[in-house]
Image 1 (tube, protein in one colour):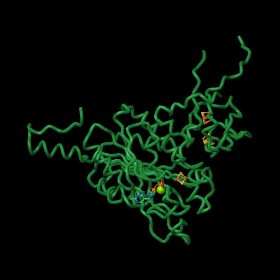
Image 2 (cartoon, rainbow over the protein chains, first blue to last red):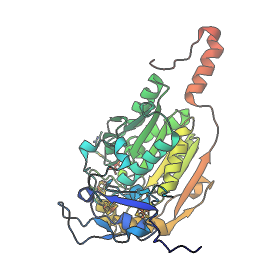
Image 3 (spheres, rainbow over the protein chains, first blue to last red):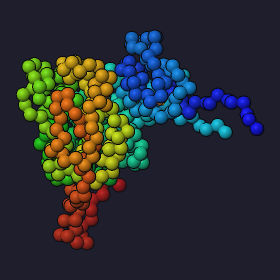
Image 4 (cartoon, rainbow over the protein chains, first blue to last red):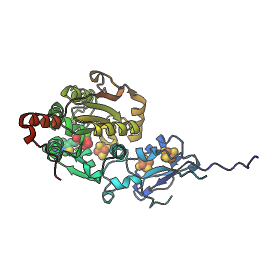
Length: 82
Length: 285
Ligand SMILES: Cc1ncc(C[n+]2csc(CCOP(=O)(O)OP(=O)(O)O)c2C)c(N)n1
Ligand code: SF4
Ligand code: SF4
Ligand code: SF4
Ligand SMILES: [Mg+2]
């Protein structure tokens, strides 16, 4: 029996603490899934933090958090929902 | 995303000291992330891991890690760490040291600790310059590179650190860049787990001084260059892994050998000499 196609839920979630960001761009350049882009907004130090432009693509690999020199971002794998 | 969501790394960091002093695009924070991963993966209780660093931008690492950590004097993290290890052999003692700290003022300590096969893990963050004091030449600055003290280009042959560690007696030697986060974390874990003198060199961007003076771009551009220019050559002869200005960066695990460490050597010798009367010192109970 064919079921209606449900949109796939993303495998991971990325969290950003914009105030810690210094705008280096490491997370944006090295995210393997193209989730992140610079935001137009400024944080209070005057840097452009990243934002999740394509959150549905996040695979929760955690690389953004490994690269971020300012501990401002991290990704986690979502729990499987049956 | 709620800004209050906690980074799982925070449990290893002194968050009350954040934001840290490092420049945008500096590789030191990335190096900490690799180290935290290594600590998690080696599964040791945190109170058995101790971090010692000297002075410099790299030296600040000790102050930001929420472990028993010591920010010592310039060039002297290895003698301090040696004392710590011998006083409490149960500890895993990790030294974080800049290229200047480790191989200029601290160079003699480095070669002799390696020669003794002292039970320490040394992580050298090599940014090819004295970052904290304004970008002077160090013993790892490549030939031709400009620094505040070599305005026309460096004319001194630099140290090839993996070779120096290898020929001084290190039992584990690896080099990665801050682009290679997973490999660097794995090398740090292996180094921590190794008995004896283990050495990991991390090539890291200093965009503010080394990068700017040499027109290498910002931190991200330097990271891209690490990605484009590195070649993985595990088990390479360390004589062949010297670095050139803007040249290829040989990365990998170069040395992993077995040799009795200083502490094991000492205990064996004393047991031979004093037999049942000798009780190896196991540290404070
Ligand atoms: C005995 C002594 N000599 C010199 C200094 C000045 N000094 C502070 S940091 C530093 C160099 C740091 O360079 P490096 O170890 O490569 O660390 P980086 O800042 O590049 O991470 C120097 C020379 C000092 N603090 N103490
Ligand atoms: S890596 Fe960290 S500091 Fe750099 S842009 Fe991303 S969130 Fe900001
Ligand atoms: S967790 Fe991985 S996929 Fe998700 S944003 Fe971070 S780097 Fe990209
Ligand atoms: S001066 Fe260089 S090494 Fe020091 S914090 Fe800035 S970028 Fe990093
Ligand atoms: Mg340095």
